[in-house]
Amino acid sequence: MFSRKVVIAASCVGLTFFGGLGIYLYSTQESSPSRTQSSSKKDSSLRALEKSFITSQTDKVVDEPSALFNDPAISQAWGLKKSDAARAWSVTKGSRDIVIAVIDTGIDIKHEDLVGNLWRNPGETGKDSKGRDKATNGIDDDGNGFVDDVYGWNFVSNNPKLDDNHGHGTHIAGIIGAEAGNGKGITGIAPEVSLMILKYYDPKVPGTDNLKNTVASIRYAVKMGANIINYSGGGTEFSQEEHDAIAEAEKKGILFVAAAGNERSNSDQHHYYPADYKLKNIISVTAIDPSTQVLASSNYGVETVDIAAPGQNILSCLPGNSYGYMTGTSQATAFVTGAAALVMAHKQSFQAEDVKKYILATGDAQTQLASKTRTSRQLNLYKALTILDQGVGASGVIAVNTQNMKSFTGDPNDRRSRAAEEGLDATATEMTHFGKSLIDAMGTKVRPGKIGTKQENEGF
Ligand SMILES: [Ca+2]
Ligand SMILES: [Ca+2]
Ligand SMILES: [Ca+2]
Image (cartoon, rainbow, N blue to C red; front, side, top):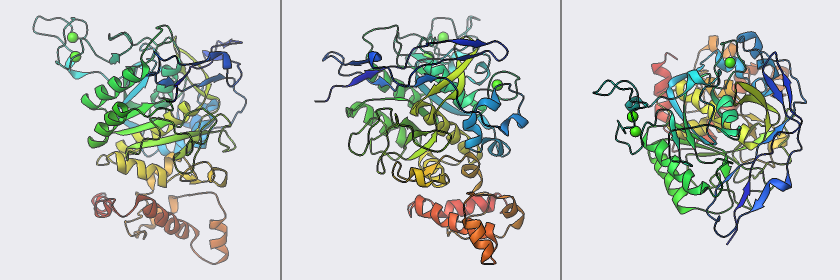
């Protein structure tokens, strides 16, 4: 039997506070062996928090998103530019109707950049029959088995207090759904969204059964109607219970976005769960740096790891209205979750499998990712939202809509120039090529009629 390694993120070393932006820079090494402890027999059921490294920023990228929103730190978030976020936001900024369960270390529910995007359980808000606030009346008003679960639940301490004693959960929540245009901090990938907070790990509570809490969190998310589950933990042991809980989510059309893990290993050979369960609703995500290289610390695998997204020195929220940088596949996972929220908001009929296939098929193909991921692609938010809009039908043929066609810009690769040399309409060639690969990736079982129908309904 494999022992499950318990790994927590590096702690804060070399803290510097930049008052103007409320930004903390942490300077630490990538991994810290002293924080890696082998699990004892008693701890064998632990599901580890995937280690995100608190890091210092080294790469500054001039960023278009800063032209769109007034959030002061947005220009320091290179991953937004890398993922084509600004153009994606011109299509949609998400929707409060999309509920994302963030299963993590809790969050700072008072954080200035998150408070407006928290999910609120409708059954635990408002007044009860005696005029008391349902949120604090000590009664399980909606009868779901949890008392006063307004924003989610703390499965570590079995109460509704979601305080983040680690920082990881707040950071992940910020990447997914920090508010845009509020003049504070950063902007999440899906700046309009509802974040359901489920706490499965707390470094201050020793002996926590992370796997049990993870399973309970997944079941809560399924029961309470989340659309997407974001999970950045994992371990090398297969858990039937965890598998079955995610299979329940699959049945309900809930997407499960999972970190590939930071074990520096090939997941095809050394499986990492839950990312590697063979379920159609799971997206496994690895992390890249600004030059599109998979991080040395990140797991990879041409059979098991689906897609890559920014994960190095990612700026996001930290508890206490502060901000800082972290590195790891957790951060990359949050990018994909945000992308899924945007796609669901834009295409409301999409279920988990549709969103998954769509995000995987619309990423930018990169040669550096060919030996590291199943799709060889990095996340592209704009293309994830617009390929269908551009009129690529189920047959891979482009609908006649030159207005939209002209606005499309795809991969900045040589296909365009080759097409120009051949006297072809470069954009059309690109789109046809891309449309075919999209359909190939989506497979024959994927609702081809529905895609075409949907486009017609939307006036294509
Ligand atoms: Ca309740
Ligand atoms: Ca209550
Ligand atoms: Ca903001």
